[in-house]
Length: 113
Image (cartoon, rainbow, N blue to C red; front, side, top):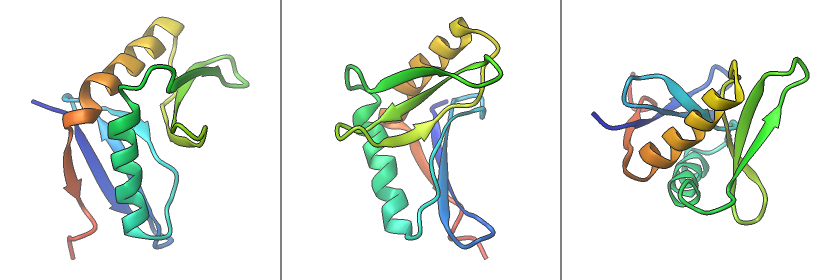
């Protein structure tokens, strides 16, 4: 089973996506976009940048938990991970994005009702 990009419409009418691993766990979340086309462009940017050297930046939250962001070539953050319990699990999360993003299926939940 492969990963999935799950595109949703938020309650405020904006669009957001999550990249999910093959087990359904979200491994990367986007910002909110005003337009659906912008969110779709964000997904394509994740596909391209996930395999780019230096695109991931590991960070530490105020409470000490590690997480990471994925950046485009212009330095803009295009996705953020969940908080992890350890640096090792954070590194596994980055590897999971690299593995799943390029071929992940798009599940467009904005088309439903």
